[in-house]
Image 1 (cartoon, rainbow, N blue to C red):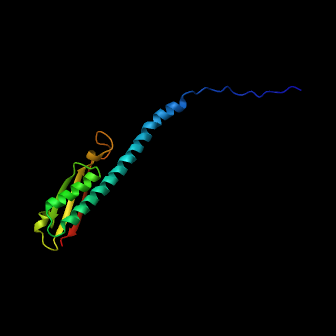
Image 2 (image 1 turned 120 degrees about the horizontal axis):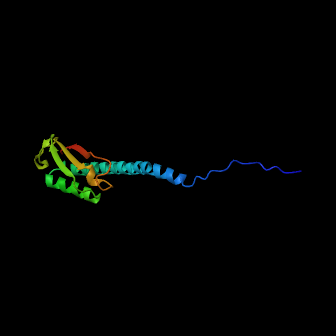
Image 3 (image 1 turned 90 degrees about the vertical axis):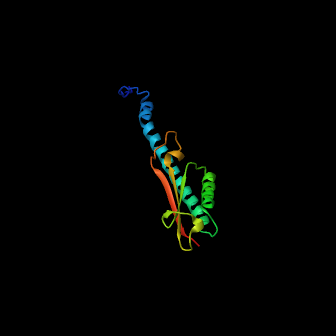
Length: 141
């Protein structure tokens, strides 16, 4: 009895196909991954500037405090978070004013604005081209 060997079709060699496919897909995957990192970082910075505005506003509503006290509190909170280049605006009843002359019941607002490129993870400004801003308001005591 003779054994019959099954004839197989010749196997084509496809060396390097996985490498080429990875080279085509990798830039898209890395772009998505770095974009997710940048957006998550922007959310974190947004939370930190909102917290700094809250801290500054809490100082500003207390009696015998001045704009310099509010600005110093905001600057300290931002520097602890490693954020530089922010602009702080202090509003009394929605107009620029001094918290030292505010009356009881006046609305004190602290607004912080920051260019997203200043806090980007990547050189050249990253993916987010807008400004980040936060406002916190309380009534003067």
